[in-house]
Structure formats: C-alpha cells, structure tokens
Length: 212
Image (cartoon, rainbow, N blue to C red):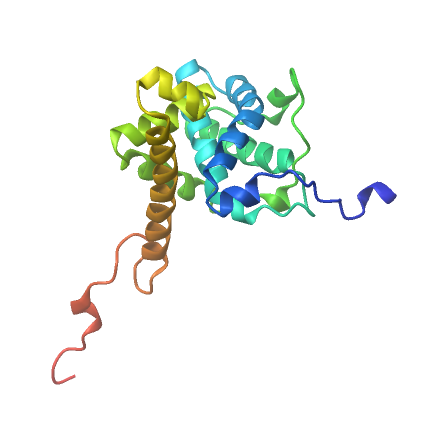
C-alpha cells in the first residue's frame, strides 16, 4: 500500500531544464532516452523510415511538453514513454491498422502509463510541431535530425557536417527556440476568439455594418 504514495522526484531530470531553454539538456535527453524511443518506434512501425518519422514526432512533442512534466506524478522515463506510446498508437490508427498495446510487451516492456496523463490535444499539437520543423533552415533541420534520429553529440555532428562546433550548437538552440515560437503562434492563432480553430478572425467581420 505504501508504494502508491506520492513519488520522490528525481534530482537529475532533464525536462525542466529543456523547458527553460537549456540546449545541453536537449542533448542529455537524447543520449538518455533515444534508445527507449527508438525501440518502441521500431516495434510499432512497419518500416525503418516510418520509425524515423515517429521518433521525430515523439521528440518534438517531448520538447514541447517539457514544461508539463511533474516529477511527483510520474518518473521522467514514464512521461517520455507515455508520449512515445500515445504518438505511435495514434500513427497506427491513422494508417488504418488496429492499435494493439500488446505489441509493446513482445520484447522490453514499456513503463506503465496512466490514461489520466494523456493530453487530448496530442495529435494536432504534433502536426504543428512537424510543420514547425519544416519551417527551419536546412542547416537547423539537418543538425536536429542528426541529433534526434542518430543520437549524435554536438561534437560528432560538427565532424559529420564539417561545421564549427559553435555553429552546430547555435543551429540546435535556435532551431528548438524557433520550433517553440511557431508552435505557440499556431496555438494562439487557433485559440483566438472567432478563429474557428484554424483561421484568424477577419477585421471586417468584427466591424458592425453602418446603420445597424
């Protein structure tokens, strides 16, 4: 019974640092959790390319959701596994395949995930995150993809791309900041009064006709 009491927060969580814009914490997160995310993606994807797309979706949402992480509710690995599981099942559902959670148990079991932790706006937010990634410069996209897909450190990315280490770090930091800005702008536009969820209200529609 005592095991269900409030959990002790871990002291080395990286998500709070990511929420504060710490670029080093992003690399630490990738180093720590890319294996877990990739193994889940491969088990719930039909092709390697599909798994790579899924990994991109997952980590983009991890960055975006970092501020919502509560270490007293769930561990960091459980929080990230929840995001991964939800995104992968959503992808399978959209592709017309039955999303069976049993697949997660065929090798290394994923951490237990509670439905109360799932954000109902997940699918739309990840769509926005993917759109945001596509709006980055080619250099920023390349650096983030090498980091997310291949788990390369900034030093290894610098060697692979022949870019100075400082430039790689700048591309990674500015790329993540830009993604966050685009996501916030999209969400604010979608939530503005009279927007209908996708379009900003027209100025003419807000002006009452003369003589009314």
